[in-house]
Image 1 (cartoon, rainbow, N blue to C red):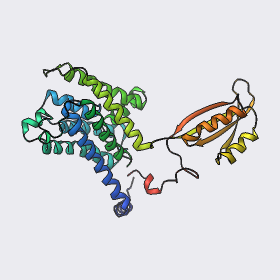
Image 2: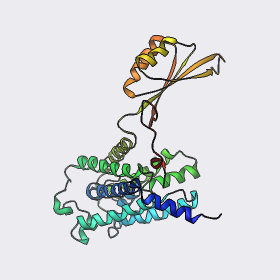
Image 3: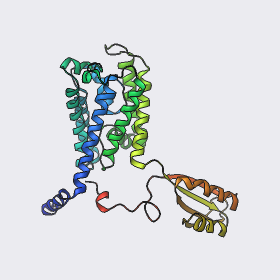
Image 4: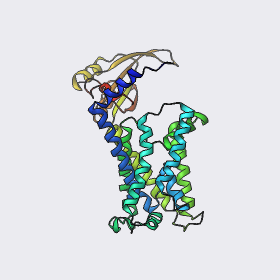
Length: 334
């Protein structure tokens, strides 16, 4: 297939000249920097293992302290990107490749800046990091939460630019393809293996290190949960709109007027039939802000107590009365 190089060059020049292009790359670099700082300052010195390739790097650093955690990240991400390219083709854009390779480099750089000597970098002793001003050894819960928040914000900045930091995401995609397991379960499996390895190597001291207690695994689980919640907040906001499906046996004009006039909303009628009874029914499709869900539930109970209602989260809602439709440049995945 012949490639139109002139067209590709024209699109590249157009992208580079766009402020959104520069802003997107700035946010990716900022997200990678926050991710690296979160690990170097709050996670790695306390041997908290929040899953992922960098969590695996923390485990391996305890076995091979002369190798930096970021270097392990390079090893994992490079191999995973190659395997992903072989398995899925060139579906990973330049943003993902850059983010996956930039983060471990920044981790190594921040580690070198934070610790005074090579021995200190190998020990990752928080008392030696930045002269001890951030030593939170007596406040593990606080450093776990702060570190997890920083990680979640960093990953959120990257993902919002249609990129990923590689690692666990690629592993989960491969598990999904070859083992026919859902993506979310693949992420859970990959992170669980890393946390279990941390429990064995760091907690129980298997491999020659000094046992640091199985309690560290609980801090790791807390870090995973908090960072995932922060990431969800970064991507979806503080609250979701609600999708409501209401199945009624008859047309209710009073409920229709309530939606249109009292709530100042609209909906869609969908003709359906019961699978068991084969009776004609009417399904109403609504999207409302979370705070208005109770109003709809109360109205349905008043107008049709026998109605069947299903409520689900709407992560993004575009159109009149909600968010405006994104611009074209916001939808492009470069």
